Structures are given as structure tokens and as C-alpha cells.
Length: 83
Image (cartoon, rainbow, N blue to C red; front, side):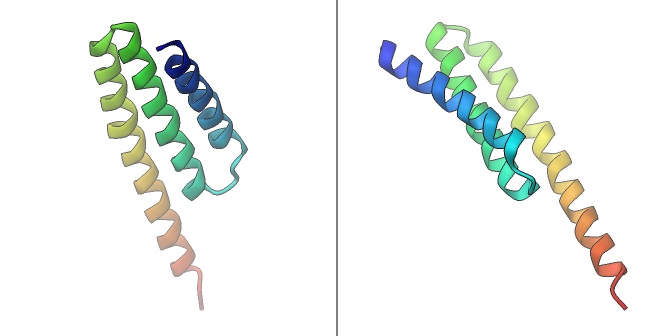
């Protein structure tokens, strides 16, 4: 069990580094999902499942909606600037 918790902690840290170090939002969101899932698994192993559920709802529900909106707006602006 201790190895699994350490693995989830490592995935959480690597996911955070992936979000911070990727200049492209398309690849940064993969790190966000990895960090969120690893953080939820870590919290589930500690026995606080309600907090893990709230974390999934906030991050994967709210932050990914904002990401999709930002990407679609950027694609629209890039298309409207073409001659």
C-alpha cells in the first residue's frame, strides 16, 4: 500500500510539472488530468473520499470547461485573422 501511495504522489508531482512546463495548452491539460486523478487517488487512499469527489468535480468539471472555451476562442480568433 505504501508503494501505491508513493506512486500516486510521484504522478501528482509529475502532473504538476507537466502543467507548468508545457507551453501548449493541449499538452498541459494532459498533465492537469494526470495530476487530478493522482491527487484523487491519493486522497482516496487516505480515506477522505468526499474531498476526492469534490476535487474531481471542480478540476475535471470546471477547469476543463474553461480550457475548452479558451481553445475554441483561440481557434476562432486565428481563423478570423486569416485574409
